[in-house]
Image (cartoon, rainbow, N blue to C red; front, top):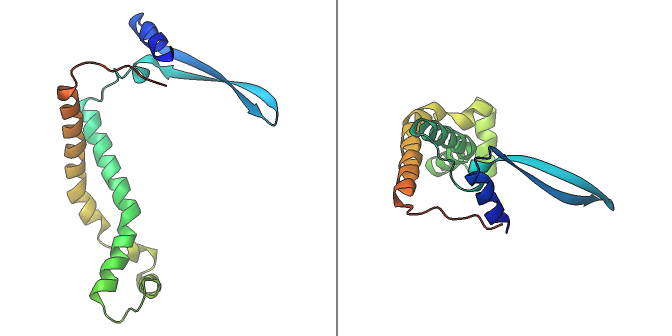
Length: 140
């Protein structure tokens, strides 16, 4: 029923759909209302190729920012046999280079990886658009 209502509103050209529901906080009901673009609810919202490139690049840089310190510690642990544990490796890196030592080489990887990640998301979006034969309704 909900999906059908969203489709009706979107067909009428609704820009936003107001969703309201009740929450109970400490036994006190509270009405929460969300304003959501109708296109986002029925699957019509599509990223432009430029937006896909930017989103893919930003996602790639963010993922490397999270994973890179772990990769640096792993690489140093594997390449230097004087380290006995990962904890010793982390301490040695922080002692010798500070927090920046955990990100040594980050910009090199990001400058090479961002174009790849941007192209990957753009290709995925394009393939999804090309392979989708008909719009599917939302089931909530």
